[in-house]
Amino acid sequence: MDFSTQMSNNITHLAEGVRVDAVNREEAMRHESLAREQCHRVQANERDKVQREEAMELRWEAALREEKIRADVLAPEELNIAREKAQAEIKAKHKQFKIQASNELKHQKLEMEMKKQIVQMELMERQELEFQQEKLREKDITAKEMEAHLQLERQLAE
Image (cartoon, rainbow, N blue to C red; front, top):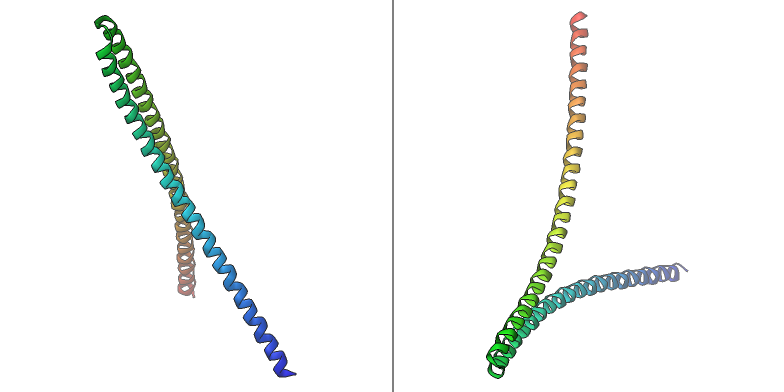
């Protein structure tokens, strides 16, 4: 009877250990998967940014090639009009790209500023807490000094 009870307890304990190990492995795998996903997102964002920049550069080069081709084909007065139009289009596209980049930079700066403010608020809260704790310590010390002073006065009075 004792042997079977002991075996049953051992098997139960072993099963619980296996279950806990499985839960821990599953949790570790989930964390690893989340980290991998985040890394993939960051890499994808970086790739997208590089691709957008490359695409903009290719469009810029294509526009310049088109302008050159038109220059070779068009008559001189049409050439000037076409050149001005192409240059205006190129400038507009370049300006649009700059605005886009500026907006992304502003967004990143705003996020960083918000994080900075959160950190500053947490620091201020921590400093306030430390200040309050220091005030309590000072009050405690003052109370102890007053008590010691009163005790000395009583002893001297006796």
